[in-house]
Length: 245
Length: 261
Image 1 (spheres, helix red, strand yellow):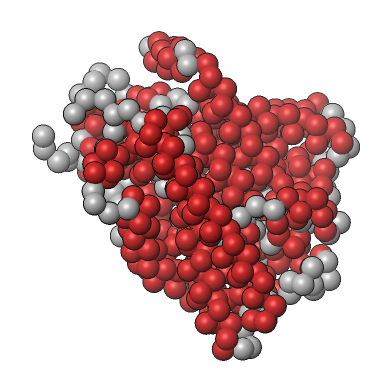
Image 2: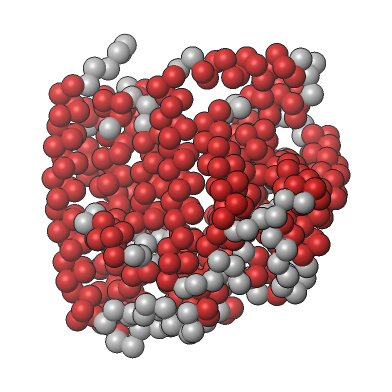
């Protein structure tokens, strides 16, 4: 039931977003910075499909466990803290990818049509890029959550993070449409690695060979963020003080 | 009693000043990134749905203002399913105060004022830039439109809440109509293909919240199905939707049986 409701809402928003992009492309004369109508449709529907698996609206579970002190139990477990939560995330994402990712794509293919990649390699590289994107998004989201070690209440931070992420990741509009200064800012952040890159790679808008540097950038961010999250966790654990027992 | 209920909420939130200020700042940032989407598109193409940047800003500002007020007063109804699930609704029902009023005042989040302030500022500024000529009737519409829009959003929130009596797990389903309407309302209505425009005008009257009033205020011709005079239809539409929302809410409350405990 919750999945069906989510799919429905995803699809309605997909139609609204597609309408805005189509109108923009139409007034630009059929093509806008490399996006044709078919490319824009693919971009919107893939974006809607990836929204749930990437958990673009953020999670709050870890920050709440820190807030309530349950994190002490996690830290006592004989597994790595980040590994434990990453495994849970992969499980969730796998389900969400099938349950919430496929239906919007089917609707999109039926109503507006999709541009499919020419090379079979795009699918392979796209799947790999998607896995990297989910991991990068997980690490960044985890860092926001871990800020709870110092802030205790992270609701405001989560809201701000999500607003910035939605824009700079290229979820709302492709980052190639940005004016130069904003594009430069976006490219200096890990956000495009979460949504823009997997969409470009999967849709074949960027051919596999040219997508390789983009995927390498994703891998680079993965390493940087993993290191930062690890350091944050260590510093946090040292400063944490769980009350009661 | 209304004053007591709302007054206590306002005082309790104003106590935590830092948290309040960061919350409002966060809201302002969200509104800014939402508008940035339209601004980026308009920096690439001259017009979107036949409207220039200033005209789109009027639509956006008006829509944000209306949604901000509606969300402030009725946004909490969106959480009804969690009240139902946790059994908190029973506690509310045995109190001698109307249910809708209690839920509305329960989490009157003052941070939502951020959106209202930005929306109002944008609405006023953009109107001035877009060449608004203040005749008495146009001025009346300029004041009426955000209030009618807020009423409409309030009715949509109530309806979405009432649906949760039936679809406890279907909260996201309702979001398509509340937040979806917000998205549609803050967008020039001409961008939508005819079937969608018809749906968001006659079934869920989102285009009547900001787009149609903007057409009337700036004396622009409208696209098919949304003529310029439809700008005055916001209030009648709000009344109609409230009637439906009220009936649905009553039916929902009657159907509710509680889960024991």
